[in-house]
Image 1 (tube, rainbow, N blue to C red):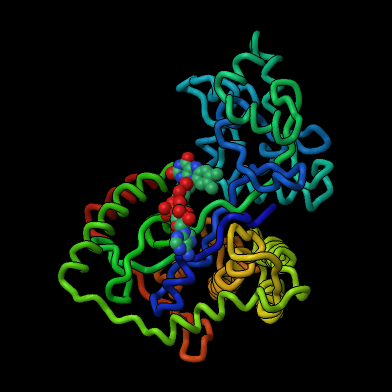
Image 2: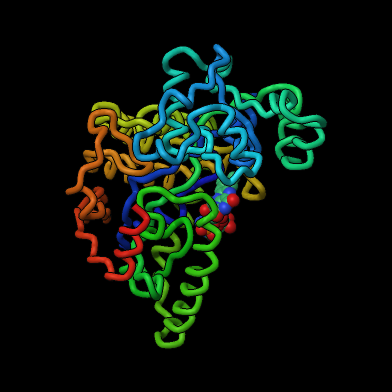
Length: 398
Ligand SMILES: Cc1cc2nc3c(=O)[nH]c(=O)nc-3n(C[C@H](O)[C@H](O)[C@H](O)COP(=O)(O)OP(=O)(O)OC[C@H]3O[C@@H](n4cnc5c(N)ncnc54)[C@H](O)[C@@H]3O)c2cc1C
């Protein structure tokens, strides 16, 4: 279970520091299956396609644990036998999907439970097994290589595992931020005039939980709109002036880490932050742990101001990590504050101390702004009434 290393939260944090509102920051999606071993590849995604082709999840006792926990809401859409689940993956339109293909957050929570209750795999995940299909079809190895070529190569090259012959070890990994910059749905402009956002750093489109595949269509549609309105804004408004003093102090700030050789290591601070967010604000959350996380994040902020790096400015990954810490800490603090405020469970946000979905929490978004003293300011803002025709579609889908 990991917070990804390549996400820096720059889009969210830059907008926040510029005065824009962020919304839905408590909704962080975990993908249930990331690689967990060896350590150098922890977090690399293992596509849902593996489960779609018949891959199953098992614990260390070889039990297919997903059948134990099918949420009542999905019971009538979920296979009630391994046989039916297998037929679904082979294209039988009369079969229902296997429980391994339930929503990402649910599967991630089930994996976490197996691990916490001592039934995990040797490196702290569970087993994802596609090799077993040899019991069902001839030439299964060829089929797996043909249908899942990138997964075959990924495991072979990075973990020396032949997925046609043996199971993979997997665990939940952070995947997507549903929350982000609050924007106007048509123009994609934030509440800072001239600041536009689209894609993963914007909020609102995916609610509390994104469905797989919807990000790329989001980018195409709303990226285009953002570009169009940003161009229009640029034509209609004159260029602002750049404050040269601010520029000089930003430059000074960025270069400070070179003057502190031998002090705190940026990778160490990043690693500690990942662990804090994973353990205390992860897939299953509760108040006491999140309060502890806030305290630790504040300590790490102090540590991040002491990081030092060697070398020069060219291709210096240590320096980049030192710079990234600022935004990573900002976003982590905001996610934690918003998650504390949402005292219910909804979508990708699950609270152990408030496990039910509450109607009253479905009526507002949690909006975050930077306060005058740099503090995180939260407000609950009513969700505007939905257009009748759209409301009707939702009712029909229930
Ligand atoms: C492994 C994986 C698989 C996925 N598969 C799917 C899928 O199958 N279907 C789907 O719909 N979605 C998928 N997603 C989600 C989807 O890919 C992402 O949500 C989407 O690519 C985000 O696009 P973006 O343009 O908003 O952000 P990004 O792609 O993150 O682009 C942000 C850009 O900003 C740049 N940048 C960052 N900081 C700065 C800075 N300070 N200054 C200047 N530039 C900066 C970055 O270098 C980057 O180029 C997947 C995600 C992952 C991680």
